Length: 125
Image (cartoon, rainbow, N blue to C red):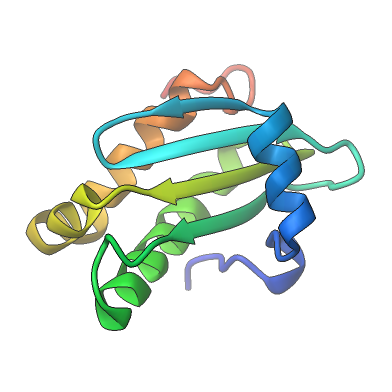
């Protein structure tokens, strides 16, 4: 069974999202925007998701959120702890999810993670 992002490892308050947006670094591609802010009080990365109605209806948004959580769960063991991460889904991510599913979302997320240098040292990916 794959690791799941627990509630404790999620950003939930508006103030937490605001801090990451305002003070964190960002990187973007056609499908996603990734914001990262150091949080030394957290032993593992905490994830926040923002998926607006521009992505689609409730069913489409929930599917995109599920895929993003799954993709983040796959890469999380390779990441430095002590960061808050917010992933903002752009409207094109719905088409990517329809076309390529988890593999496409995973690839888009990993591309941004590589750019922000969140991967632990010595990881060849």
